[in-house]
Image (tube, rainbow, N blue to C red):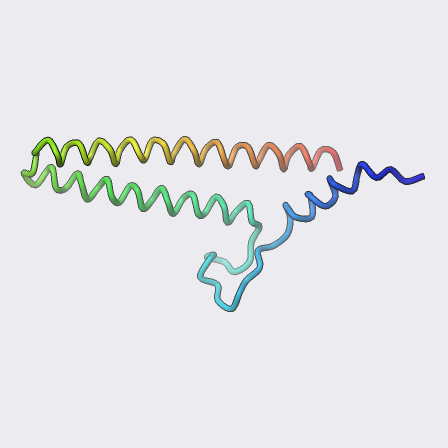
Length: 107
C-alpha cells in the first residue's frame, strides 16, 4: 500500500523548484526565468540597495551642512530601518533555505 504522507512533501518540493511564471516581460528577473527562492533573494537585495541609497542621500544632506537635529534624526532613522531590513532579509532567506534543505533530504 502506498503511503500518503509523501504527497505533501512532493507537492512542496515541486513548488519550491518551480520556475517563476513570466507574464509577458522579463522585467522581474535579470536572466529570464528562475526559481522563486532566487527571486525572493533578488527582491530583498533590491530593497536593501534602495534603502542604502536613501541613507546615502540623507548622509549627503548632513555632510552638505544641514546638520540640524531633524536631519541627523532622519539619518539615524534610515540607518535603523536598514538594520531592520537587513535582519529581516537574513531571517527570511535562511528560514526558507533551511526549509528547502529539509524537504530535499526527506525526498
